[in-house]
Amino acid sequence: MVTHLVTDGAQLSLAVDDTAHRRRGKKVHGAGWIHDGSAPTRNKLAFGHRWVVVGVIVRPWFLSRPVCLPVLCRRWQGKGTVSTVDLAAEMITTIAARVPHRRVHVVADAAYHGKCLRDLPTQVTWTTRLPRNAVLYHHAPARTGKRGRPRLKATGSVPPPRPPPRAQTGSRWW
Image (cartoon, rainbow, N blue to C red; front, top):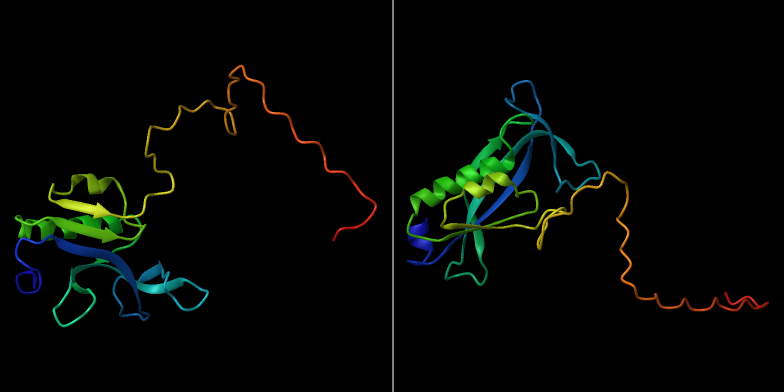
C-alpha cells in the first residue's frame, strides 16, 4: 500500500484509535464490558471486544481529501493485561521497522499517551492532546503536606485599594 499510494521519500502519516465491537453470546471468545464513547445512546457501557486500529493516511489523486486505510489491528484483552497504548506502540514499531528509510508521524486521540511511547524508534513522531496534569515549563513544586493552594509571599508593595461598595437604592433594578 505504501509503495503505491504514498510518494517516494514522503513522510508516512498514521492514525491510531480504538473501536468497540458489540458482541454477545456464549460462543464469543474474550468479550467483556467496555466503554463505547461513540454509542448513540446515553449508556456508553457495552459488552463485546475493543480493537486498537492503525491506519495509513493517504491522499489519492482521484479524491479531494485524505482517507485513512486500516492496516493493523489488535484486540485489547481487558484490564490487567497490556494497555491500548502499549498495543498501539507495538504496532507502530512494527510498521517503522518495515519502512526504515521514512519518517513516520502518528496522530492519536487523548487516550494515547504514556511512558511506553518513550521507547519508540527515532524516526517516529507522536502527536496527541496533552494530559490534564502535563508540565510544560518546569516541574511541579514540592509537596508541602498542607491542603490548598500555597499563599503568595509579600513583595513589600501595598495592594491596590478595593473599590467602594455599590450604593444601595430603594428601587429594585431587576
